Amino acid sequence: MELKIDFVTENTTRKMNSTQKCDFIISKIRRDRVVVFEGGLAPNEEAILIEEAMSQIDHENFLGYKIITPAPIRSPSSGLFSRHKDIKMTIIAPHDYDNLSVALV
Amino acid sequence: MSILSRIFARSRKSKLTIGILGAPNAGKTTLANRISNECGNGTPLGEVSPIPHETRDVVALEHCTVSDQSGSLDLTVVDTPGIATSVDYREFQTYGLSRQESIERAKEATRGVIKAIQSLDRLDAAIVVVDAARAPFDQINWTVLGNLEARKIPLIVAANKTDLPEANTTLVAETFQSEIIPISAKEGSGMNELYGSILSIASM
Image 1: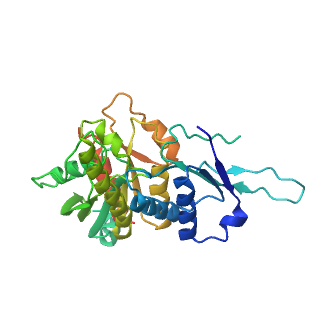
Image 2 (image 1 turned 30 degrees about the vertical axis):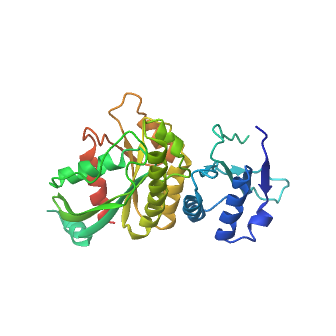
Image 3 (image 1 turned 45 degrees about the horizontal axis):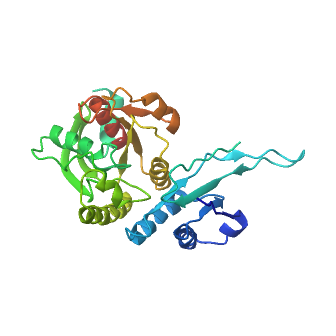
């Protein structure tokens, strides 16, 4: 299976409201793409995404999705005065990606 | 009764609506039936089945009384459908259901998931039921916990199915980095500790 990944930067996700994020994600996974959301989804956005996906499941072409939000990783500081930054992301894949797993090293 | 107990007894809520939440087949309805039975309700709250999404509607048991030496609590227990990010009708076919039966069940299941999410808004507290016999890393558990915390709803993590030899309650506690109540809803172990936690929440 060909793996297609859309990496969505925090600069882009910051401009979207919760509904726009969910619509964007569902439109991508409906086209069999994996979406990596830098900045991650907030818990309420994950709940909205579930509701939206459930209302769109048609039992033929769209059956839902798989989701992983790994524990945030701390980026190394790049200079004496720079601060560490927690990097959070959420990975959403079509339902039939059976072995979705993520290792952040 | 000590002075402290009297203070707590006075400040404790007299009524509490508590939801039972979690992934499909974690044992939510088995727990709801156990509580219902121990409250003296003659009929079970819902059917229990090895087929996922057996509970597809939100069901409430009202006026279940939980007591200790400080007084009693009028509990409303809300059993919810399992929360999932996908519903594949073909999974139901593996349990012997016909294609049409499986699609109908899947349609009801998707509606049930939405109802479970919407039920969060009317809860005072929640029991998140985790199947301790399965790896607890399902993102659904995090989604449920995150939403409860964001809504400031006090919660109890119940590590269920401790009657099974593969149950690993330590792993559940380590995964969620929180205190858990090991229970077997099927056999009834851990229920006194669970009721104690519910009463503690009512005193918060």
